Image (cartoon, rainbow, N blue to C red; front, side, top):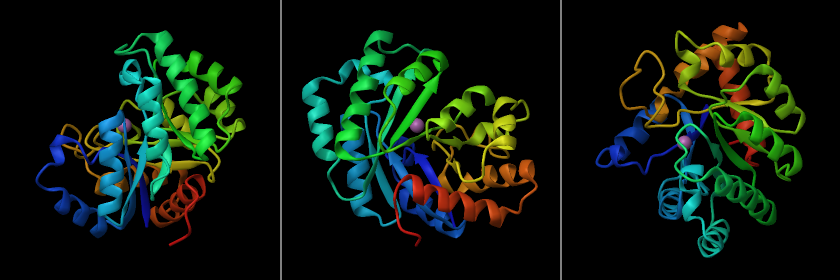
Amino acid sequence: MIWDTHAHLDDHRFKGDLEEILKNMKEAQISRVINIGYDLPSSRRSVDLAHKYEEIYAAIGFHPHNAKDATEEALKKLKNLAKEDKVIAWGEIGLDYYRDLSPRKVQREVFIRQIELADEVGLPVVVHDRDAHGDLLDIVKTHTPKNGGVFHCYSGSWEMAKELLNLGFYLSFAGPLTFKNARHSVEVARNIPLDRFVLETDSPYLTPEPYRGKRNEPAYVRYIAQKFADIRGMSLEEVAEQSFANGNKLFRLSIN
Ligand code: NI
């Protein structure tokens, strides 16, 4: 059994065949998936999906791209949503200095505000970091989430990874780990303590080899697990078991 700890199954690309996608997932022994919110409507859709399908859990939050829309009013609505059944994380939140779709100052303020809200409702956070390693590290050092969290599709160096691990974070590996030119993530996968990693697809994005370029789906998380197993000299079963246990601990769910 494996977790896919990060997916966007409410994406329009899954319209029409979501049931099929969930069936593929089950057949591939993927037993749990978290649907991740990026604004208020997508967070609502996350909660709806989690209520409808047993294997789906929900995260709610404002992605840094949408930080400019995160008014106090909208954040209050998110906080209410956080109390719904099967909401297990606040995210994805963070900084994206690659696309800069919201002003950087607003991204930082909204990120900090959401860490505070996650602390208030007792949820771990899911962090998105693109080309913003320095500022992100500064913020999580001074505003360390009380209930921990995960850096999703971790793309930083092993040096930064060590600092994040010291702060209590988990690190998540996605499709790019399987790419030929992967360097940082392979080094991190080689060195990370085995009780601190999780796996994800970020479906429909970041499709792993051998399907790179096609639409991603949760069943493909096993290709990422296999790559991690190869790097560590472990069996696929060992990686699955360990990543499943780590996901349960990070998101505070029981074993089954
Ligand atoms: Ni995502």
